[in-house]
Length: 250
Ligand code: NAP
Image 1: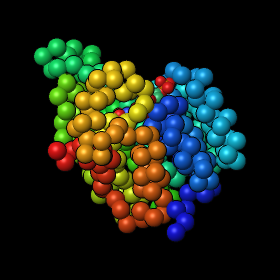
Image 2 (image 1 turned 180 degrees about the vertical axis):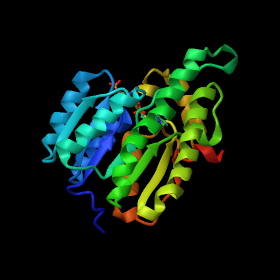
Image 3 (image 1 turned 135 degrees about the vertical axis):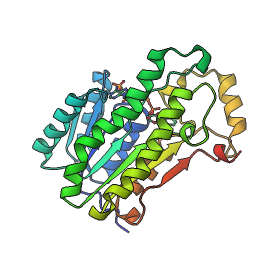
């Protein structure tokens, strides 16, 4: 069945690297035009935008900090002007800053909440009316297994991702009458810059905990995101799909 992404427009936050980059490429390969954001890595963003245009779709890369409510508003308005409208939103931008709670500073708490949770609010708030008015659209929030099971050393991150999961379920019910769908994916450990600083010993230790015995790849996540955005998931809303090789079953 056609997943209906062709000639639609997607906004993806944090698209320059890691999981977001793979989501951008996966959508583009299915014929979807993409406007993606990033915060500092101009070079990676520029390279990706060229690669996406080479796939025959339109692409705009914008340097926008998702924590900045007004800047995000300007971004969404700009995407509408450039592309006519947008149909899909992927809230992917996110950070970690792990510390046991007894040593966590107020800044570490706030930065993670501001980026992961408030960043999602900012972007969704500026997109939702357009999606509701056109009675067509789909949102996927990139959460984490940490927000489902809670992981030690990640009280800030777990709280932000748990908040994203609850937001997803609440918003799905608010907008369902307009046929707009809202879902989340909750990845486990995925090979990106976030895990690249782990030592080989730590990786081995993690892999032992995962029933499928490997760390995930960005493509393990992006395929599910494309499915949830598109027509094949037209009867799926308010769900948090865990993509963790079975880690959370333990
Ligand atoms: P990553 O490789 O570190 O990339 C993060 C992306 O977010 C980059 O494009 C970065 O832009 C952007 N970003 C960071 N802060 C931002 C801000 N304030 N405003 C706008 N963009 C911002 O991360 P990743 O591993 O792909 O993670 C992507 C998402 O998946 C995150 O929400 C993360 O929590 C979630 N996740 C990851 C894993 C994992 O194991 N990797 C597991 C579960 C969930 P620049 O390139 O400009 O810095």
